[in-house]
Image (tube, rainbow, N blue to C red; front, side, top):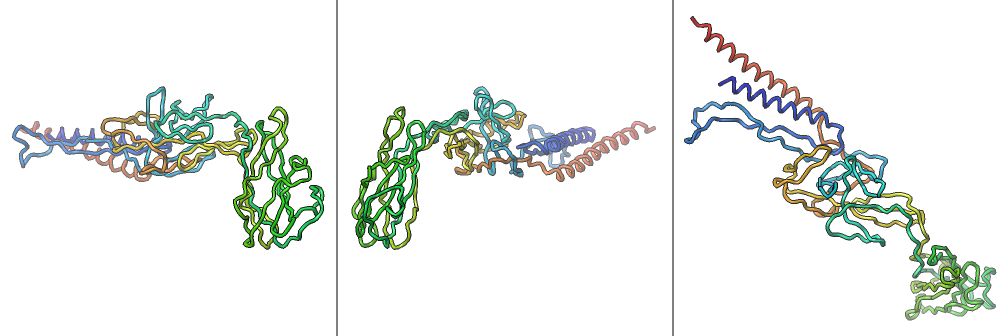
Length: 405
């Protein structure tokens, strides 16, 4: 009997060494997860069960369990290197076949898809041309590397404070004469072809609590000397009533329509006893821009930055979680496949629910504790030697019996 027990011990110790050796070999593999051998004793049984005095007949490897604990995160220089800080897997598609990984070493292929070393494509939620994320069923993420089209200015907003202490001006307005107005601020606007035009608003006090607004575009007086708007303030220094937006007709090239009308919201203007100042200046147009860089936010949103200063979302990385990650089937290449034991994949945006956050420009290292594995290797070696000694001792006993006279 001891031969069988010792042989099972040798086999179990050998399997344990295999598991430890695999862990050590993948100590530097990005996203790799350590495994451990789990053992169970063996007893001979019959229909009536095992005797209470039965001696076990050895050991078996009951399971090789994967350890999906968090690995250390190290920084890299690539924005498409992604690390999951918390629970979840990247969802990969290779010709429609799905797999899951913690290895976030990604790059762009020639068609703009985000791929890993095996050619699998990262999946997530795509964005439309305006950067709005379309949540639903994850699909293969494809980034647009072309130029972003210009957007003509549709509206603008300017908030200024006009100095209540300013004197009432007489005479006509002249944009080249700084004494004919008491404050000015430029605002850029863009036509349908992305050409920039400089609109400047000039403010001059014409009576107590009464201010006129003049405007020029590219140096041309839009009012031909007359004000394009007039505003009245109350004793509290705020505008009276609800003034409509100031509309300015900006001359543009004939190919862009000849003239573009831009409404400017000045409803936030104040007249307080402090110097002229601008606290808000916005407009919604921009010129054409070329792609300069990508970045990935913690919620998985892939942001494209352009030379015109615009940032547009091009999609959002999806993460997938499982009820029992240890039930996943290893495929090699740092990838796993869904099984009945793992449960159904539950996809979502990073940071939602129990899913971890995405860290861009970083990679999750293997969770193998090399020091612990070396100690385990020594222990497994001793166990192997001890089981070999069991067989050797039983052989000596058998030899003694055979040599009896």
